[in-house]
Amino acid sequence: MNTSTQILTLAPLLILATLRVEAVDLAALKADAEITFREGVKPFVTNYCIRCHAPRLEAGINLKSALKNPGNTSSFIIRKKAVANAKTHKMPPIDAAKIPTEKERQQFSSSGSAASNT
Ligand code: HEC
Image (cartoon, rainbow, N blue to C red; front, top):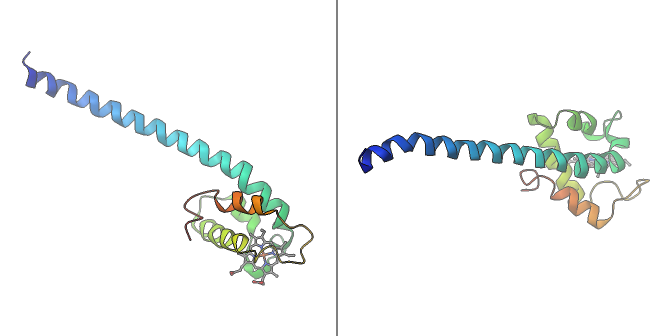
């Protein structure tokens, strides 16, 4: 076998190997996102937001359903708004029973780069 035949034979294998690495990375990313969501987003929203945003729907924002279906478009939009509101201290309202610490707000805001990109 000459060198160019060897390269031609190996090329598909190299491509396959690269694709495999990407698939593994995607799986890892997805697992990371799930952990962030479970540990960073859900407890924050449950502690500080749910009482006013589900089942009572202040401003039409149902955070409980957004938590249940994190992947759909309306949840994504709600999440963006939620992060913006928590970041700027607009939410929870100043007279709410429980107010998050600055650190908790920051963790929530950075929990999902797509959502905190506002
Ligand atoms: C004490 C009740 C209460 C709590 C707790 C609360 N909210 Fe709200 N929220 C409201 C009310 C009332 C409104 C509508 C009036 C307003 O916009 O100020 C509102 C409006 C909103 C809006 C819509 C504002 C807009 O820009 O359209 C978002 C998003 C929101 N809240 C997110 C959150 C998040 C995230 C939390 C938790 C960090 C939270 N809220 C906690 C009462 C609450």
